[in-house]
Length: 447
Image (cartoon, rainbow, N blue to C red; front, side, top):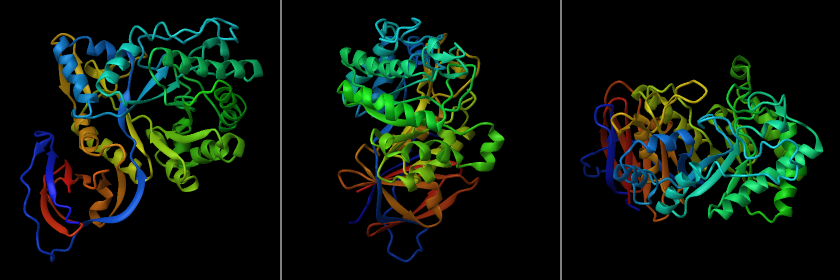
C-alpha cells in the first residue's frame, strides 16, 4: 500500500486551517522520524460537544441564515466538524440559565410529576436541529445533581444522594423516565452516565459519590430498572474526574482508578450492566490503568478541560496534548465541553470558560476560536469506524493516526516547538520530508 498524501492542512496562530502544497514522495534513504505501523488499536466512535442552555442562548444572537450555517459546520456529515456523538445534561448543568431538575416535587417516589417541559424550550430544539443535520448523531446524558429532595443536605449544590432504598429506587426510575420522555420526543438517548464529576463538591449543581455507592446503585437499582423497563440505553460508569484535594491527586495520580473504576468493575454483578467508562479531562492518569485492566470495554473522554474564557492559541496547544494523550491511552470518543458561548464564556455560577465558537450578542456574529481548529484537525477526516493505528519514532509523542473504513490514513500531529522542524514520514511504501511551522497543528490524509 502506497499511502500517498492526498491532502495536508496546517494551522498556526496567524493562519489556521490552510491547505499546504504536497511534496512528491522520496526514495528510501532519509531516516524516518515518524512511521505509521500496521498495529491496530481501538475503534473510533467520534467527536462532539455538549448541548447546554447558555449555548442555545448564544446561538440565538445570530441571524437565521448564519445560525443555520454554523450548525451545518458542526453537525452535518459533510460539514467542517462532522460531530457524531454529543452530550446533554439531565436537569441543570453548570451552563444552564439557572438551577432546575426534572422533578422537584418532594416525596414523589413514583415520579408521577416527572417533566421535561423546560427542556422543550431550549435543549430539545437545539438537539433536534442537530439531528436534522445528522440523524445518526449519538447522544449520552448525565445529571449534575439529583432533585434536591433526594439529597442531603437538601440543595442542588454540594452534598450527596440520600442513601435510602426508597430514594435509590426513585432515582433509578428518574433515569428511566428521562430516557422514555426523550424517546417520546423522537430523541434516542444512547447512553447514560450516572453522575457528572463524581467528586465535584461545588457551588454549581453537583453531587458527590464514592465508588462503593456507584457500585451498589448500578448493580441493585439502575441496571435492574433498565432491564425491567426494557431500555436499550447503555449504562456507563462516568463521568469520573480526579479526587480532591488537588494536592492529594497530584501525589496519587491514578487513585481514581482504584477508588472508582476498580471498585465498580471489580464486582461482576455491577460489571454486567456497564458498557463503558467515561473519564473527564482530570482523569487523564487513571484511564491508563482502567484500559489496561478492562480492555474489552469502551472509553470516552467526556469533557475537555475548560480553560478561562480567553480562548488563546497557547491554551489550544495544551488542549491538543489532551486529545493525543486520551487517544493514545484508549478512548473511543472525545467530547468537547461548550460548543458555543458568548464572549468570555461566563457561567451562571460565575466563572469563565473556553468554547469552540464565540457569538457576540451586540455584533451578532460568530468568532472561531483556536480550539475549534484543534477539534477540526481530528474530527474533519477521522470518521467513526476508523481504527487507531500504531506510530513509532520521535514524533509519535505528538501524533495520532487512524485507518479509515475506506482504507486511508488520517494522521494528526503537532509541532510544539518554537522553530520549524522537519518531519520525515514513512507510511506504507511512501516516504515524505515535510517542513512544519513552529507551534502548529497538522492533518495529513493519505490513501
